[in-house]
Length: 72
Length: 332
Image 1: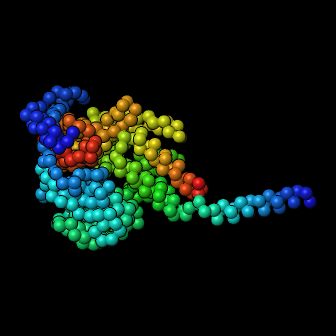
Image 2: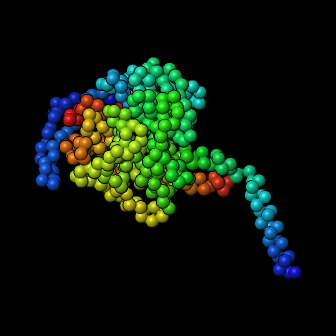
Image 3: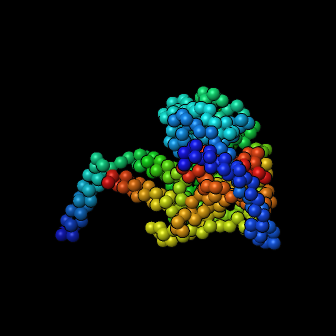
């Protein structure tokens, strides 16, 4: 019985977290994130910059994409 | 260096002129001519409009040079001696407006522009008036005319899908005819981005050539219908430049092969990447002239590093490190 209550409580917490996360104002639309990520990559590639710099910028694009998807 | 200074330097270069330093590096039992390019002074273009913001692609027709300026969202037109003639396009989404134009091609009397962030190809007439175009399902990068009302459009893979094609051939009206050359994918999407960087040189009979910027010492030849018809190994004297880059996924090794490329009357002009501060690879100032069999015919030294360039009738039109237009006689 105790185990069942813990499981139910955990489920409730996870459900509440899921609902509030999805409704968080900072959370972005996946389409916007994809679009921004693509723009970031295209701008970087068209810089025609030295390759290490390009690698760093592409990594920054990927981080920004991750942040966007998480709504951070 | 301002335009006047550059012109003076060019004139001085002209006076020193045509240095043919034969015997520069006999390799493989053959001596390769090495020569210095002779710079042609570009006239000082006073207009602000003539200043290039971020020039990303060049195209030539019989008497004009077109430069796609991604920052100014415009195509700027110059005479073949570098005199500014005018520009067309402005930022926007409507007809004749551009969002990050990244490619330009001259097709007869029309100018074709890869309107990257509007996901479309736009067609302009010689006066810069919009004459239509068509949408594409990807962000077009470069565009080339293959003659016979056909356009080759390249795209950078997003890395989110497998098997994204790098090349797309369309009818001038926008009907897709062919797509191919699948992007290489692995567990490292950033490495894949470098491995999928290509350069395209249109041929003279509707065909085209593809050169990978790193990892392969080959030139791929495609017919206008997209069939891979040949693979030419390039002379080993046009050597790989190795770059080991620390990355979040460990050391990434790139074999830099070619920074930019052009084809003129059967000869390929490949610029070798160059060390930057001993820890990076950037645009080079050495151009290898390679014949159709992949043999190194000569090496041309430029006075500055160049990014994009094209070659026509022995004249090389290039964008330098500062985003300026430079013109050189490179001979044949």
